[in-house]
Amino acid sequence: MTIQATARLERATRVRAEDFLCAFDAGGAFPDARPGQFVHVRTPADLTLRRPFSVAAVTGRGRFELLVRKRGEGTAALLSLPEGAEVSVLGPSGNGFGLPEPGERAVLVAGGIGVAGLRHLSRTLARDGRRQVVLVGAPTATALLDGVLPGPTTDGAVRVEVATDDGSRGLRGTVCDLVGRALEETDAPARVYCCGPQAMLRSAAGIALAAGARCEALVEEVMACGIGACRGCVVRTRTGYRAACADGPVFDAAELVFDGEERA
Image (cartoon, rainbow, N blue to C red; front, top):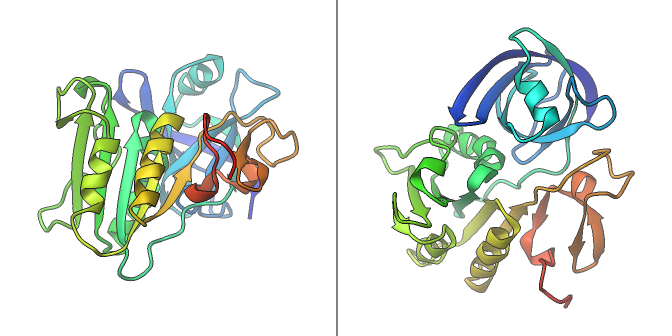
């Protein structure tokens, strides 16, 4: 159920450079978001269009976190708010991730700020005692958003691998170089969850589907209305154009048609 509510900013914690984890309290009547869903926020500087943010965590009834990158007038205004300030939120919106079935391995693939879209899922899997492999990629070590996704656990329930383009941390290469290796570890079925730039989604989905794994992709599009009315965030699928906000933002990767691909 999607509702409009007033949310109070509890705190904004700097993660890296211009990235902040912002905690909000929208009150007990605000529905809990499922992993992969988003909220649409009306920022102080934007009286017309809201800004979509993946729900990075649910920390209590009506309480949630968003990862906000300062990249324009709207996000700058949002990050300038003092603790206790109130904003209008619409949500939780969209279709979220499906959870792995019994026996399925969960492989999470995040590129750049895509960690925000997988944080809630990773925390949910950890809470439920589900094992997961977390693969994270960035151009350099300094671009990694440390602390957004859960770290590795000593019992192996959460395993984390990193790839950087320049090799300054982890594997020298892209996060997609880690995907095939993770899928080849065992013959157990796997479900791949990915969020990041479209080139990364395309590559990760291709590797996962070729390996016979299920794959769900969270697409990050600019959303104007957030309810599927304006059709400004459509993505190509095997069955036509669909709105990322209303039909997604999580799609079965096998249904998506990425840039440069032809429809089947």
